[in-house]
Image (cartoon, rainbow, N blue to C red; front, side, top):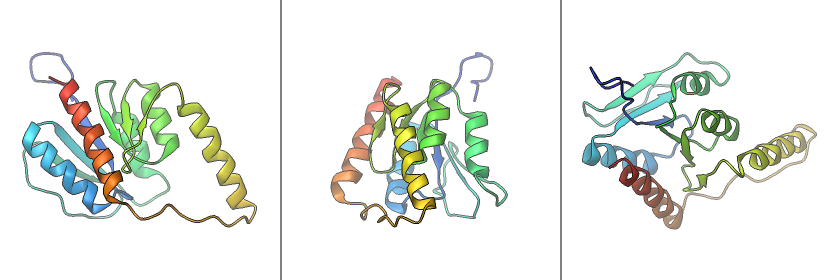
Length: 158
């Protein structure tokens, strides 16, 4: 987004909302209301979002990675992405954006390529029939880690 008449980009927090837990969305809504940062949630199914002039929801058509494609197309270097989708994170970081998983992992440019390689490796294992467990339930420590990472990003905007 561009600030009217300034040509400057307004930082936006983009949320890959299809897999984002409600507890994390609640943290994001409170932070957006408190800070005034633009918050845009993107998903391929309807969802409730908090009211606010700086909070938007975009519903994309159902389809493989439709939300990811919209986010990748619109994200800017000043923005923050909330997602655990490693390929989307890598693409956003190539554009200069920052990224945090909904579990609080702050991604960095030095390690995102190795994370992408590991993701591809595990994807190949699953495709060959190797069963793996999903991630554990979201815990209090991860919620706090997420909130801390979000606060650091918001503080960097001032």
